[in-house]
Length: 114
Length: 111
Image (cartoon, rainbow over all chains, first blue to last red; front, side, top):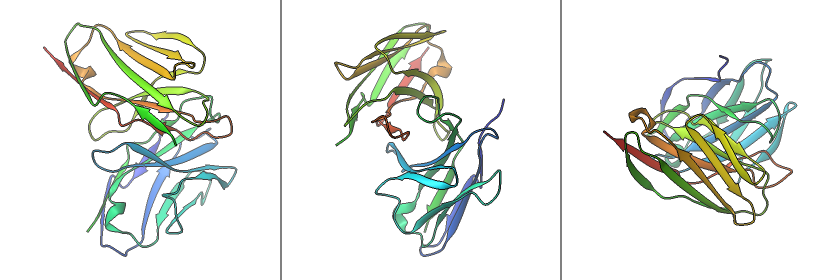
C-alpha cells in the first residue's frame, strides 16, 4: 500500500540553526500539506501546496518557514532560524483530490530545538 | 474563530461500544474527518462525512448533523488495540482543504 514517508524521524538542533524536513508524498498525489503537533496539543495546519505554489498558509507559517518541491518526488519544509517553540512533531500529508478525499499522513519528524 | 470540542479522555471495556462526540463551530463547513492516532504515530484515516447521516465501516461508524454542528464516532466490539487518540477534523469552508483539528479524545480500553 502506498504511503507518505518522512526523514529524518528525529532531528535535534540548536536554536538559530536551519533545518530541512523531508517528505516523499504518495506518487500520484497532487496536494501536499505540512502540519505540526506540539507535545500534548492538537494537530495544527501550517501550509498547503499545489501546482508548485503555496495555496494556503496559517499564521504560524511566518517568514522563517518555506516549502519547496525540488523534484518530482520530494516535498520539503525549511525552518530558517529555529526557535525553542518550534519543537514539535511535524507531519507531512498528501491527497489526490483537494477537500473531497482523505489526507494521508506521514509518520512525522520529531524536531527538538535546544 | 474556529472551535472544535471533544472530550479529553474516555475509558471503556473490551467488547463494549463507545461513542466519541465532537461539536464544532467554524466559519463554514465542507466535511468532517475522524482520524485515529496512536501515541507517537501519524494520524490514520477512519471516516469522512459531508452530508447528514450515518456512515458505517466495519466496527466503526460516524454520524454527522450539520444543523447541530455535531458528529460522533461509534466504535463497536472494542479491542485493546483501539486504545488511541481519536481526532475530529473539519474542513472549514468550500475554498480550502486545510483540516482544523480538535484536541482529540484519548480512549483507553481495559480488559
